[in-house]
Length: 444
Picture 1 (cartoon, rainbow, N blue to C red):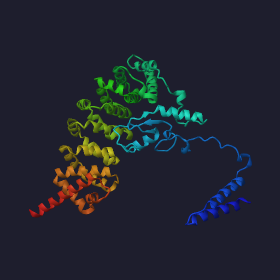
Picture 2: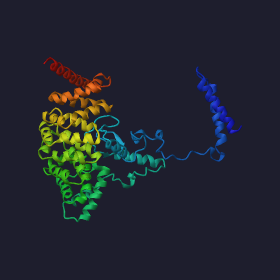
Picture 3: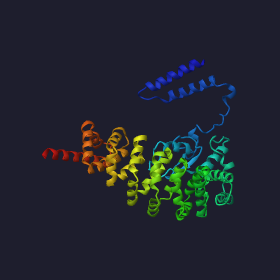
Picture 4: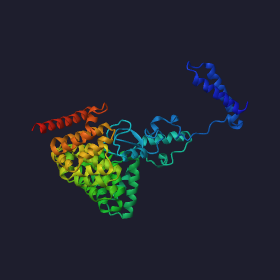
């Protein structure tokens, strides 16, 4: 039988299956299987018909890969597995892309992140390497072979020797080479390296302030080391670490400044440390970074400010330092993000901050976001900010009333079935306030 005839039979059987509303029997299925087998005999050459299929690269066949080796975002074998603070593992390139868009939630858990530190998952990395080797497959090109390059038992003497190059009179070239090597070592296994003495962290930060050529590498090293709880404790106990981080946030390269902010964020575990950081002048450099930092670093900067402002006295300092203007300016220039809107909402309960928002055109900006966004949590924060502004300014309440008369923006939030209960409550409170004010004007 010619291949065309077999194809015609297969088409006929498919048509029978699709067109039979009462279902189809086993005979039809058996006939279809026989037709497909015949088609294979006609099309596949005899020389290869009974050969085993070639070994798969494994990277496209997601069903064959252990699920823990697949990136939850790309659904492909991970090249550079890293862990978020939620404990979820992702391929670095894909989670960095998500964070750079300002999406500040863990894709799997949807939990809001407090920082963007990505810790290498060496256990998964080595598991992927072993799995590939057992199947005779090549590792992904962009992932180094952990069996050849990773240090399973870190050479502590070598690590400490590299650190100590920054507390001695080593040449710039020696320190440059040491900084590069430390960056590679701590990227692969940051949790394994304990600095033992806080003075070693201080020496890295001092070298970064004195030698701009080393800043980018050294600040990545400090950030990687701060992922380890024991190292963070040493950093918190050293009185020089926070002032040096603040200095680098103000005077370093743009990458070093962003990493200094991320490292500072890691140290804000307790109210006492938040008070200290606020008193030492961190807000000025952090607020300037809102406009200047790279997209991924912005999240750490905003998170650091948000964490600091959980202390009332720090919020007062931030408002005096014009944090409201910086955040609102960033929203207007780059678009709203969850982090920026949340930070603006946290400021809105402060009288001076709410007044500044009114003066800076926050009402029209927030109403515009409400019209454009479909994110219900973002809507909730926008309505909450508008409520605080409306309660403090009759002129801004009139501005909201004019928009409501034309566009019905708040009424849409109040009526929507998808709006959060808080968003509905705040929207209705503003609408009631508009009605009462309007009635009072007519009565008088």
